[in-house]
Length: 471
Image (cartoon, rainbow, N blue to C red; front, side):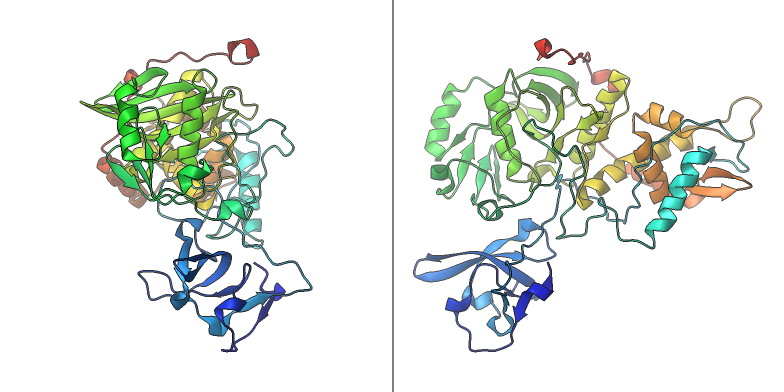
């Protein structure tokens, strides 16, 4: 936010009546000793007391909340200038619900070309593509002197949409960032009950107004229908015939299953799924045109049925070869490896299709880190296990081969190698160097994984969606 557009005062004479939408002032963050700067988004009177909905600037919107006057520091209030439009707080972009350690990312959007293998001087050195890597490294050096790229989104900062401007069809499950309006900036659902879980939503979702007035919205964990009370849900459950998501079960291993749901054939379920996801995905622009999308729902099975864990959606026909449009692991299942399982499954589908894929861009900081974690492990696993051919002293592989074997787009492969700082210039050529410490760290990380996708458990035949008649 441009602070120059704010009129700052430290006077103590201001009262609650002077606190209006657009003001900025320090607010005590609950369960901490911090007083971060926050913007007043909305106000209301409840039980005879004035309440203020605040957005903590430079913090994720999921922390936005209603506060009372005791938590406001009126001595340092900042008012929007009357001669200018009130500044609008930018918000974080894509949230995937996947959490990984944060690192800065030097992104690359350069086109890749296949190259010939080049002899590398040491074991575990992999040959790159000279022209592409040269340009990529020059770009990396240039970025050190420039502002962060659009994919390097800081907390509280909006990413700039760069994908397909002017694309006419309504998007459901898109990972592109959208601009907030006044209504959607305020959380409107206090709590949801989904199966045995009670979950506090993070963001606004356009559920019917009569539902949002209730203290809790009750969802059927199989068809995702919403009800206003537990008794209404009990009556619904007696009539609901589903014990798993509608559609075809295309994967099963132990208790984990994936169901492919066609957004055209199962429109009501797809719409309910989008509504549920909107509670936890700030970036998601919700439309009811689910026909062009497929939804892959991951479930965990027990004696009562298949319970939803998370999902990702993808276009039936993507001109940019996106293999994911929107992805989410529900909060009760986060930090347990399910998010990575969703990403891994999306690439397993790409391998069956014989294509390379990439998530819809741009990604937010958390979205990018989640994917970067998967890309890093997949690429490192391939490099470590690549053996030298007969007559070769060191293993050799090209960027194109890495892309084909992992189904990861070349641009994503290059940016990941840059991020890992594995590309080096040696005796007139670009090589990939793996050090022992990185190998140990990777093997230790892989050893901790308890859930992986087994390609033998996938029973799925790719379809050609180029003809609209097959939709």
